[in-house]
Amino acid sequence: MVTMRYSLASLLANAVTGNRYWKPIWREPEPKPSYDVVIVGGGGHGLATAHYLAKEHGITNVAVVEKSYLGSGNVGRNTTIVRSNYLLPGNLPFYEWSMKLWEGLEQDLNYNTMVSQRGVLNVFHSDPQRDAYARRGNAMRLNGVDAELLDREQVRALVPFVDFDNARFPIRGGLLQPRGGTVRHDAVAWGYARAADSRGVDIIQNCAATGFRIENGRILGVETEKGFIGAKKVALTCAGNSTRVASMAGLRLPIESHSVQAFVTEGVKPLIDVVMTFGAGHFYVSQSDKGGLVFGGDIEGYNSYAQRGNLPVIEDVCEGGMALMPVIGRLRILRSWGGLLDMTMDGSPIIDLTPIQGLYLNAGWCYGGFKATPASGFCFAHLIAKGEPHKLAAAYRLDRFASGRVIDEKGMGAQPNLH
Amino acid sequence: MRIKCPYCGERALEEFTYRGDATVTRPKSLDPAAADAWVDYVYLRDNPSGLHKEYWHHSAGCHSWLVVTRNMSTHEIVSVEFAGKGDSQ
Image 1 (cartoon, rainbow over the protein chains, first blue to last red):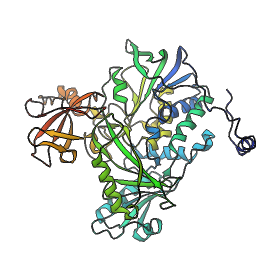
Image 2: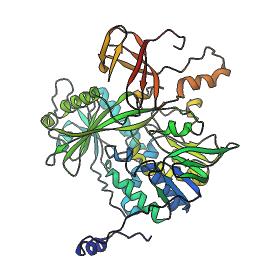
Image 3: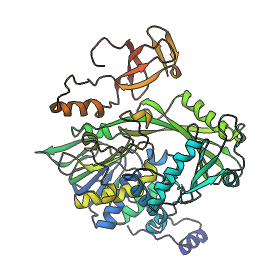
Image 4: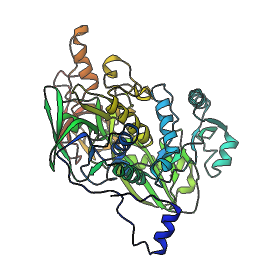
């Protein structure tokens, strides 16, 4: 199939012919008996990995097997925020590279992913918190990331409706990353799928992996619902289910599965044109193009595979929202849903080789995997193609827990529900 | 989700604090040769999608440590017992 290139001319031509001639944007092939690389998990990271394998390394004899439909998992369940306001050396350059890839993504994929660099604002409420954010902002600037420390009046210019004089949590200022923002998440899955497919990658939906064939410590292929698929290399991108899938290869990981909820309200007129986080509790919010406020907060705090949460967190998130912006008090919540997280023991991801030859692991994205999608795919493709880590992801080793080189942004220790 | 504390009866989730997997065993040896066992204990988890034994603290109640057996996919609680009968923690 020849993929149609989108342009103003293609839009106009299809508009005047009544939109009757649009074609499916990826094929639906049956799996071949074997591939050079089989990627298990057709979420954002798996599809991005397939795209960069094909584009950067010329490896196109690739299949992506997905247990459900594209966009059914975490790539369609997150709150669409992208940012690179990290603190630690292992994380900052990686997430900044991701930010740069977001900035060029639509041109790279020839697909409208609605990248909106509206700014990410973290407000603070006390002098010690200002110091902490100043330190973070300085770490960002030392790594070439944009960061601005705003005083109270500068924050007021951006978000005049927030409760500056809350008796308990008055707003003293904020840390702004102007290049941060939002990206339409399901378009990311579709755009990467279309780009990978157009280079010859087979995307096989509704085809769960059920096991691995391993002989003498070397991977031979993947058992799936559509039969055995041979592979020289197998790459796992199934965050949320990483431990379950890796256990089929006999691996035990430093990961627990947890749930986090997200919410969307009824649509309202334009209210907030940045992504904003509350500094005194866990609440973050942005406004979708349809007008709904998209917001979320803490993870549920206990292991779960249920893709849903419970009421105490909903109450906590809404209390945070009301403390920050009482203006939303009469808004009705349309929907809430849960996503399934790989929570690692230090809150940072894993992109590494495994003890099984030919089996590669991309896992542990905690609740922050969406923003990492392009860099994760880019660095994972490098690892699979070259057999050695990309320098930007070299810290995301599987053995860092045993060697003590953990990357713990929050300093919480080996307690996944606290990261 | 509500947890039936053996001492206090059924109480709301907010009264409890989660600790994590109750099946891992703290190694007795401090010998450097036991490092692998310590890595297993501190970091590695089975993380099953079915029944999971886990520690909860009734922190806004009787302060008992509990071992709850819960289904990870449905949140159904199968049993709740007092912890501390074994030697795992």
